[in-house]
Every structure is written in C-alpha cells, then in structure tokens.
Length: 204
Ligand code: ADP
Ligand code: 5GP
Image (cartoon, rainbow, N blue to C red; front, side, top):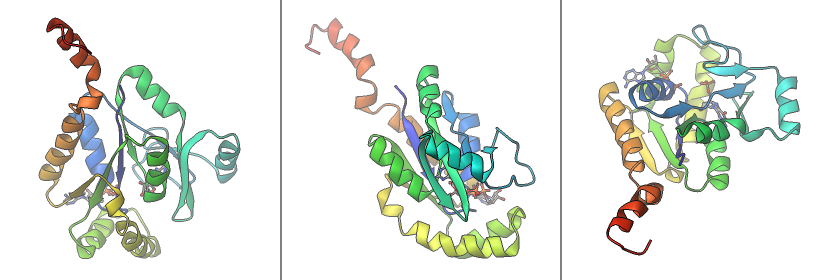
C-alpha cells in the first residue's frame, strides 16, 4: 500500500533540502518529480529536480487532464502528473510530494488519507536569510517570495504535522519519525495483521 506524503512550506524554509535527505535516508520512498514552467536554477537538472516545460506544453497537459493537481505559483505553473502515483503503487513505494498549499488542498480532496506536513522556518528573518544565502533568486523574486510566505503560513492548520526547521539534523529525525510512524498505522498494515489473526483462529 502506498502512503502519500504531501510536504508544503514557504520557499526557502528548507523543504527541498529536507525532502532530498529524507529520500536518501529512508528506503522505499519515491519523490514525485513535478512539471513546471519555471526556468531551472543553477544546480537543477532536467527530469531530476523538475520536468521543465513551456507554458504551451503545460497548458496542453492541463487540457488533456494529465495532472493529479496543478497550480500557478509565483507566476509559473507547477503540477503533479497522474502517472507518479500509479508508478509508486506499481513499485510498492511511498510517494513524497513537494507541492504548494493550493496543490495540497486539491490532492487531499482526491486522496483523503494522504499525510500532510507543513515546514516552517523559525522566523521571517531566518527565512529571508536562507533565501539570500541560497543565492539562487534575484532580489525582486526574494521580496515576492517573502510576501507570499505569510499567506502560505496562514494555511498551516490544514496540515497533519508541522515541522519547525531549526537544526537540520533535528528536522531530519523528525521527518523520518513522521514517515516511520505512518508506516505502522493500523489501517496501513491490515494486510500484515490478518495472517497473524489467522494463527490465533480469530475472525478477520
Ligand atoms: P525550499 O526548498 O523550502 O525553498 P531549500 O531547501 O532550498 O528551501 O533551503 C533554503 C536554504 O536554506 C538552502 O541554502 C539550505 O541549504 C538552507 N537550509 C535548509 N534547512 C536549514 C537549516 N535547518 N539550517 C540552516 N540552513 C538551512
Ligand atoms: P520552487 O520554484 O521554489 O521550486 O517551488 C515553488 C513552489 O511550488 C513551492 O511551494 C513548491 O512546493 C511548489 N511546487 C513544486 N512542485 C509543485 C507541484 O507539482 N504542484 C504544486 N501545486 N506546487 C508545486
């Protein structure tokens, strides 16, 4: 059974850092590579960080109904292809999505049992510092991302878990704890419980 983990955070909170470390550390997790019309940043690789496509290409995919969810964020389109969930199920892996609050809302409607995690930087000052230190965005882009952060944070109550990203190692451990706890949720392991009940001749 595939558990869907939806991770959202204002840009610069450390979401990509935490998600890539989580996937490297925990087995059987698949990262959902989104489609976007944003231009690649310096270190980003096509089809590894994102599938970078044109606006026209993205709009054709919307028209064909190929997205599980999509949204316009900072003037660019971002979307999750329907195929990623099928692929995760086929491979017997859990799926991790790094998507914004609009996408998270759409997906939670389609998959109510999805687990949602909101990552918060410890303060606006720390968030600004992280965005500037990353050195990937122009000043006006950083200003815009900071303005949007307040709006995104106001949605935190819609999430199951909130992770305050202070110390990286502490956040790694907490995110791993969330995944590991969800993996032993009763509803998820019914398949493993039933054969045990059989050995006690208990009704299923
Ligand atoms: P997001 O994906 O949320 O936009 P990033 O993962 O790119 O954010 O992180 C933004 C910057 O903050 C990066 O330079 C990253 O190395 C740094 N960073 C992430 N988490 C921490 C942390 N706990 N402490 C200090 N710096 C961090
Ligand atoms: P960035 O440009 O910093 O990589 O991402 C900007 C925002 O878009 C982040 O909040 C990120 O979570 C979100 N995002 C990335 N991929 C998707 C997606 O497929 N769908 C939605 N709705 N948001 C996404």
